[in-house]
Length: 330
Image 1: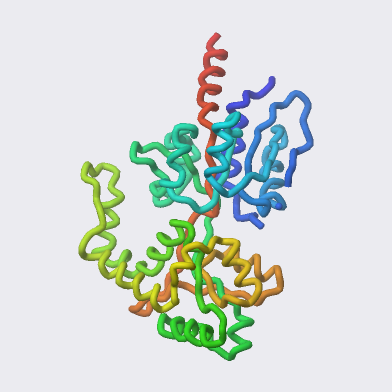
Image 2: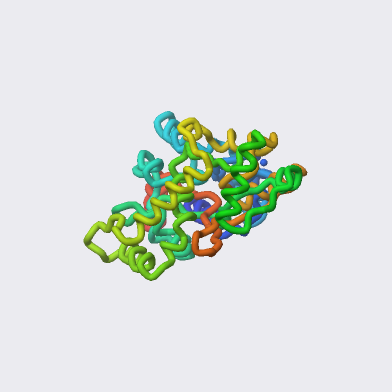
């Protein structure tokens, strides 16, 4: 009996959400099965095609899955939606709900699906709309901290930072050598938010911080909780000091991910805010790269974990599901 496309969509989504970290480029359409419908999946990066796409297809041998390399830009998907419609499944990496809001009405609410139930509440709340709906589910976890070029530290005989003071000192010495000590792709609002969170880990994990987080994330609260006057003033003071210590300028706000990667690859940048994926990428390119945490003033060291990318379903599939149920009824 031929399987319904809706069940196949859910099978693909489940395989994507529960996949382990195989991320490492595609196009690719799996070897077609006779009398089988095709599920179209847009991948945000060619880096997913080498291992991730084959893994998904291996888990679903009875389903034709066509993987298309799209673009890590929500405006790209908005263009598709306005010019013929979205594919069945889309993916995107590192974005805010504000960025995704224009697509909300075009994506399915996944909040009551079994897949959503398999996701940590902390991750899920970060992608929950004001009305409680969830359009995006996280796939894999990625650690975030400082990606560090050890070759540059050794070349200029600069000790690797072990605390905030030595981090600032290293940045200053590199600047004297004509090399940027630290930078980040502040062009994206999520980088600004993640940097603030990493620098504020001690405050957010304190007793006051935990109380604020509990109140802020309480789903039963009828009051919209904002930033308090206990935790956040110190957090923003720390961010302001970090901006000064790393020499952030107005021009830096225009640097995107590709700009940062090229600076690092060419030896013009010693450290940048990035992920464990970046460490592996540069190690594979022969650059001696390591990972450092966010250094706190109290001596604590923190790494952040975030989903590697998110996956969403075309809302038109909801009508498909209802149509198939009606067909089954008759």
